[in-house]
Image 1 (tube, rainbow, N blue to C red):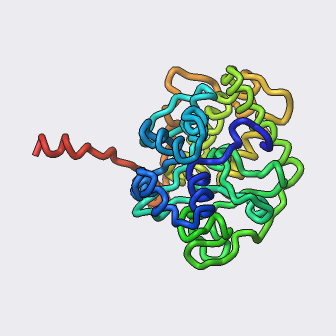
Image 2 (spheres, one colour):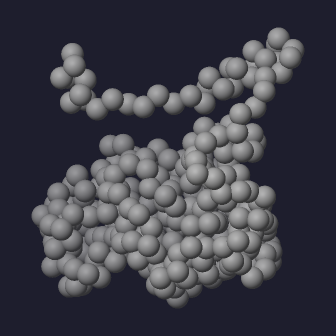
Length: 309
């Protein structure tokens, strides 16, 4: 990943570093810049409006295009991936911001990178396809090893001091080295991103399709009830390694990616396989309870509810 075009610093990381240099809190600095403190209540690393881009450009001296290039939406667009400003986004890990607190484990980090500096967050650490820091060949983490809190780098100088914002435990340890096989597989996955950013995104799309198909058809993964990019990094690691070993161990092609997991492309890729219920009454009841727990009802927009009320 080192030196790749999609491995740059995020907007939030840039602003935190700038506030540290000026001796301000991030919220105070953005208030003075005209961005307001509320910018920290949303995922600015994902996308920014034109006005915010202009204000950051003036404050940092960076061209507007370079500021936009530091957002995840721009990186996905460069790879030819359809994007949307809000809601579910393919390949991205959610951080679940609520009142400036992060409820989900979507922000990954490398303990060695935080220890050796500079204190920065890479755009690649928000991509669900990454689980290894190729620079230091260690496994990425997504939270505090002591209290289990999600990594919140923008609160209480957690990024600059490399500590948990809740219990203040250091985030530089423990360090878990990745195996040689995992490092090789991570490099192969990153090569798919390079190809996509060069204009050939077919293999990256096939890899995503293979991951999604395994999650839908394998009961072990399907029980989570959420898309695989919402999982914690340890769970995604198992999935990514298994699928990457089956599809990316050798020279990859579009056809080999699909054959590796034994799938056939259909006209309805989102359709799930039907499974029979056990004959035993108690086992059937347990199975039905599992199915009911995975049901998700779509939310109705507030405006529509008001009109129909």
